[in-house]
Length: 97
Image (cartoon, rainbow, N blue to C red; front, side, top):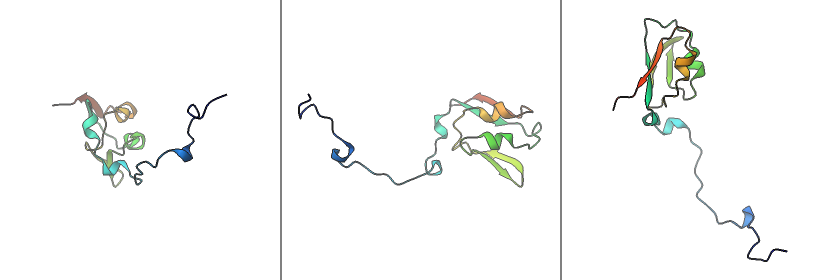
């Protein structure tokens, strides 16, 4: 049998912690996490937008159904856009310091 000192606290007995309001990544620039970056080659792009669909960071910007740019403030360099591009219009290159 456990003594009172060995008894684990329940969540109700824990001290109140810091509560943060809900947020999104749009409030925090995360692009400085990258070691490689995507580079778009517009001459190869067919505007299929598979890169835009696949990007987990919403870093691919589209206007009027066409690829516009990559928002490097939020791109983490995962390479999913490059992997999904059927025309190899996005190339992953080392990040320049």
